[in-house]
Length: 128
Image (cartoon, rainbow, N blue to C red; front, side):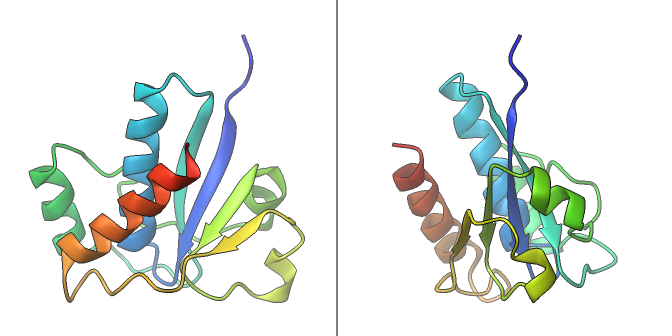
C-alpha cells in the first residue's frame, strides 16, 4: 500500500486559513481517492482555533483536522510534497522548493465565506 504524500498549509497563527484549507483539501482528496493528506500549521500558533473558522466549517459539514494550532516544524517542511503558505516563511523553512504563496485570501475574521470560497477555488484549481 503506497504511503500518502503530505501537503502542509501554513498561516500566521495556524488557526483559520490553514485549518480551512486542510479540511477542504482532505475532503476533496478522499472524494477523488488521492493518496494525499494535508496538515494545517502556523508560524506563531494561537492557543486555540478561530471560533469563526470552527463554526464555519461545522456549518459546511466539516470538522477541523487539528484540535489546536501547531507550529510548523523543519521536519514537516522537509517531508512535505508541497507547502502552501498564506504568510511569509522564514528562510530556514524555505528549503523545500515546492512552496506556493496564497497571499490574496482575505482574513477569515472579516468574512469566513469569502475566505473559504477563495481557498476552495484555489484548491479545486490545484487538484485538477
